[in-house]
Length: 265
Image (tube, rainbow, N blue to C red; front, side, top):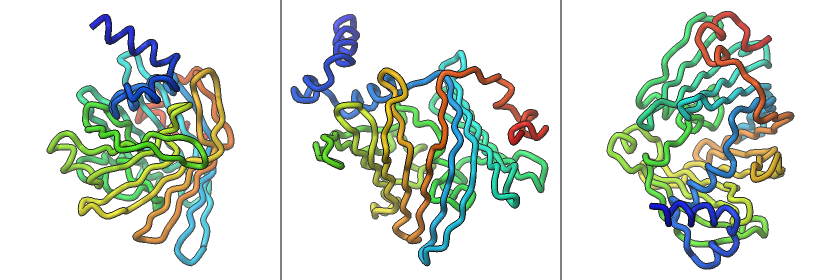
């Protein structure tokens, strides 16, 4: 066990050598990615642009909060600020023990929190090309990771990893039979994801662009594009401002905070 821990710490410093030597498995790459880009908390203002098959566009402004609690589990809050017809709508996500999640959708007109449970997670979130499942944290143990190949994306060397549900429960809940991701070798950051439906057909593709280094090993994409090939619809997200490791009160991630309207002030 001590030998494994020492090797893992060495990998943090010698990524290029380890990649070349072929010492990393698909799961180890994902674990390393989670380790390198982990933050205790973050806030972000995000501009969202929805584009339909005819080129019609709708713009939305959202604010996102995220925090890791003392038990190591994360909670996130996504709140719509514009346009007026959906302002105040919010999605609250709690990561639970055992690789589980809880999600609630708040609709101002109803003035109550609606639980998103089970297979409801396959549904589209507020007309975007993201599902509720896409907005949940992935527990590493819930999936299998198969290192397929190495390819270039925008001239950067990447690992290509196939991700499939590891349990029957996850297979039943997920909208995807598998995902294939491209992870840059130099910064261990995902730059492309292909989503395959339950019949194995390519369903969506997400690409991440304009990568910036926030601090030390932590990177982010200023722009992300999710393309729905079946509906010929796209969702573009641009991060206007992201702050990491800032103080966020625990009450932000509660029903009371949202019902009081504080999430859009």
